[in-house]
Length: 354
Ligand SMILES: NC(=O)c1ccc[n+]([C@@H]2O[C@H](COP(=O)([O-])OP(=O)(O)OC[C@H]3O[C@@H](n4cnc5c(N)ncnc54)[C@H](O)[C@@H]3O)[C@@H](O)[C@H]2O)c1
Image (cartoon, rainbow, N blue to C red; front, side):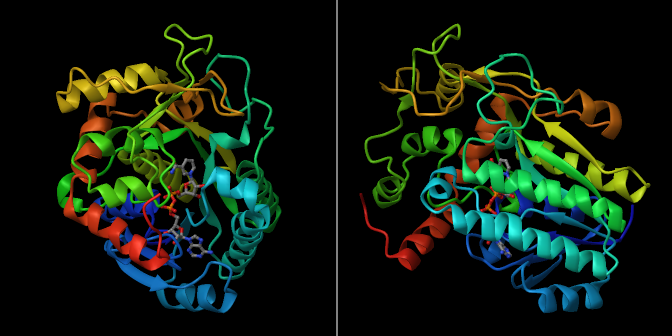
C-alpha cells in the first residue's frame, strides 16, 4: 500500500472518477482536477478536488506545489465523435493543445510519469476482423480520434524531456463501480450502446429519454454486416477493469517503465444482437426486440482489441463478464443520483424534449 498523491485530470467524469475510486482503494491519494465542463462535482469524491482547467498553467502549478503528485492520470477531454465533426476546433483545442500545455506544465513541476486516456478511435476504420494490436496503423476518421492521436504523439515526444508515459487505447467502456461508490456514466448526450439500450427498459423518466433521443426506444444501427448475425461486433470492457489497468500502468511507470502504448479491451467481441440478448436476460424482458435502422457511416463490422501486450507487460487481465457490465450499468442508471444528474444537466442547458 502506498499513500502517494496522484493527480487525476477529468476525475469528475465517468472513467476518471472510477480511476480515482480505484486509486483510493489501493491506498493512493487521488487529487482530482476538473473544470466541470461535462463532469459532476459529486463524482470527485475520492480524495482532494480542485476545480480548474488543465490548460491553466498557473492553476496546475499551484495544485502541484500544494500536493506534490508523484504522477498523473490524464482523462480530461471532450469525447463526442459527432460533435467533433461539427466543431473540430473545440476538440483540437481541448484534447490536443490544452493537453500538450498540461504535459509541459507537469514536466516543469517535476511530474514526469503520465498515464494517458487514449482511444481505439485512433485506429479508424479497420477492415481486417483480427484482434487489433498496438502495431496496427493509426488512421483516425474523425477529429476526436485525430485530436487524441496528436496528444499521444506530443506526450511521446516529451520522453526526450524526461516524461515517461503509458498511453492506454480503450475500446468500448461500460458498467459502473459497485453501488456504494455511487458513481457511473452520466453523459449528456449519451452515444454509448449499453446505456442507450437499457435506459428505455428501466422506467427512465420520459424527459430524460426524450433529451437523449430515446423517446422511441433503442435502435440497432445496421443488421446487414458481414458478421454471423449481421450486427456489428465490438469489444466491451468493464470500467473497473479499466481502472485496474490504470493502476497497473501507474505502477509500471513508478517502477521505471519505458514510454509505451497499450490496447485495453477484453479480447472478446460481442455483436449488438448478443448485447441485446444479454440485456433481455439481465432485465428479464424475453420479448424485447429493438428495431434495426441503416448502418452509420464509418462504423466498421468488427473491432476487437488484442490486449496481449497489457497482459504481458502490465500483468493485467479483465475479470468482469458481459453480464457484470450490464447488471452494474442497470443498477447505476436506475439510481436517483444518475437521474438527478441528468435532470440537472437538462436544467443547465435548457435542453427540451426532442
Ligand atoms: N467513455 C469511453 O467509452 C471512452 C473510450 C475511449 C477513450 N475515452 C477517453 O477517456 C477519457 C475520459 O472519458 P469519459 O467518458 O470519462 O468522459 P467524461 O466527459 O465523462 O469526463 C471527462 C472529464 O474531463 C473534464 N474536462 C474536460 N476538459 C477539461 C479541461 N480542459 N480541464 C479540466 N477538466 C476538463 C470534464 O469536466 C469531465 O469531468 C477521455 O479522455 C476519452 O477520450 C473514453
